[in-house]
Length: 554
Image (cartoon, rainbow, N blue to C red; front, top):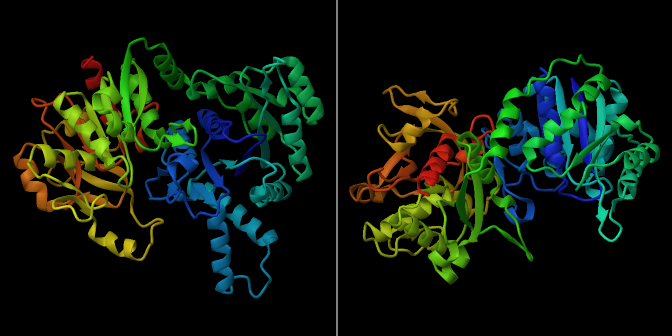
């Protein structure tokens, strides 16, 4: 097994995760079994309790671990599902070591950062490779070099390199800023970043030069000289039109060829035809389709970010490439909808998405948005919280259940059409929030004759549908929630025309709802998160169906 460590320098948010995903994808395209691992430096056991504005979107794997959004990028670039072993945090490592110490797992030794913490890190990296049957493991070290909290992970990579010098390489991603008053790329920050690595006993095999514009030969030569590297091992990675061009740009510089040679592996033919076709379809699309995303996790200080809904954005892009249209996103705070009114806040939109969310803030803005989409027959897609809000809107405005609400929002509401799942109550009472909600992939039985069934059957390749014993369609989709539709209200909802188009195999949990096509061109909402399984080469059928309807509505 071979190991590639990808670290970052100068600033965070460089695109280190996209770089790591691209390297993994290129090596896989050359016929090797590859897996990616993300190491996050925070003490949290997982990303589940972190605010989206704090660390971006939480991504959920099939086996139910709540991770950093980079796992989503890895899955999209590798086109394969990853596991909980592909994700590591400082909290996981220390908890494991402490538990082992408490059970006398170290036979009375004094437990120290080195070797016990570093051995635990190395062991977890190796296990990720083994369980994924990987020949090459690409490990992204979170944060930037020089931070006090990630030093032990860098030390673990150094130790593994010392133990297996022919099996480990180090790739450092660093930033070259442009000072506008001077007008040229400055290489000193990258040089200092590499020197910090050197001070830890690590010499990078490759330096990925992130910058606004591609580095020139002068900067390449200076970096090679002052970073003690060969000129050909300085790899340009400038800002590109979209993230899916990154592997193609790196491939032009033969990065994967150079990596394989340094690892002593055979250079095989690179198969990138389908990826190039996807990128071309994405970039050459002319017809614009405006999609309004009404959420509440955009603001961070004085800035507005979309990272809280990264998977939703990418899923729309994947569907858009398939349909050869160009999505234009409008980011709308549900609190702004409450202040300004729906029409003024949203304006013109071909389709509306209400994504995931928690708590009571901005709820009425989301409900008003859904009512507007339903009555104006604007294609609507609700995801998780967006489905719950759609049920509340329908209960209030069609079923006559005035004041209907979610128990999460108003525990004293007369009609709690959304309530807490029974097994979840004990966790809330005990304040056990982390890792206790309904997580991971769960089966969903699709109602025959529904729009949902039509979309899944139409999609090729589809996200692994199968037939249940009765011959109905069964899919497995990922979840992340604690509240569900209250079955006491299912009868009245259905009598008033709401179609329950997806349920759990035992029929007890509502997984998806929709309105018939004769009443609305596209009104679909799911309790699960289809965006988690969308991939560039296999867009999720629900997003394809939604975007098709949005295009037709223009």
